[in-house]
Image (cartoon, rainbow, N blue to C red; front, side, top):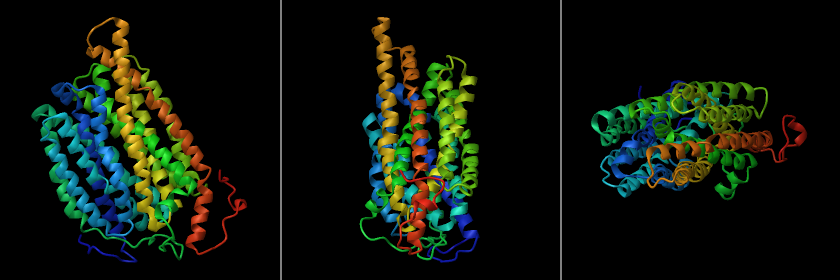
Length: 460
């Protein structure tokens, strides 16, 4: 089906569906590329004699430039043609992923991963903004949950395919095979429609611009500040898991690398698929009866996730089946986060600033969350491993010490999930007021919303 790239105030119903399918595929390969490194980290560690701290920094390399360049890309998404931005970004990160396979040292790999982050920084602001303009608020969380299915699906394929390719053809080939599908998607992205800003809103002036700094206009919204904090905590947790879960089950539960990546793909990725779908459905359902329902759903789920993660890490060595069930349950609950929070963000931000809002959110999510999640977990792992070595009176850091160190460091995951649940509850206390304020602004109502009109919550 061919569509002319451009702007249409009333796109036919097949256009949002086509756009959502392409955006899902782009997001899938976005996260496929991210998980390649996690799937092959142990072969690289042995080949280059790396510490867990160095592994953490390699995992964080992608997030550093991703967070920084994402801010101008977000602003560009509010002003320029979003399908073209996405097409260029997909092509860039696909080529740079292939370039990662040419790395000959730790430093060259680090630089290649930095470049991948630049390309992938185009995806989230442009895609989320476009979905917000194609789907009305009542259906938005479900549409976003389908888009965000690319996270667990891409991660699952990234671990499964990359682990097997690396086992058969070497770790470098795992980077090469990811390039061609990305280039195909770059062409298909050009065939998407760029909907008008605010096209899916019922308010008469949804597409009008605000006066003043776009960044300050976003940051001054109380709910956005809480959502930014949740983003940092969520990505801290998820990047700690993705960077070290294969190594953890290999060292602590004695699985070979092929089975370790398979278990990771199932527990970390596949378990998230029903969580994502159920989270989107539950967020929209509860939002129909409570204005803060889209945040109460992930708050409850991440609290349950914290309990599951804690129990998983307490499973004794070698009992990988019980570990997989509990870790998979934690990842199932964790994936409730995406549809509810992403929809809530769009509920409180003017349509013309959604790309900007997503870029600021992702700046904190990746620079403070994604980067430090893998780095701090790696640093803690090395610290506890050396501590165990010193207590044992040994002179060399053996694999058993590394297993102990990583096991101790993994307790940071349930702690972060608990803090995430608390932050989401705090955001649920301000979102109703901010939603009402935005609706009045888009309807050109000058008076501020009254607290008595918001029985569900009070602004904090």
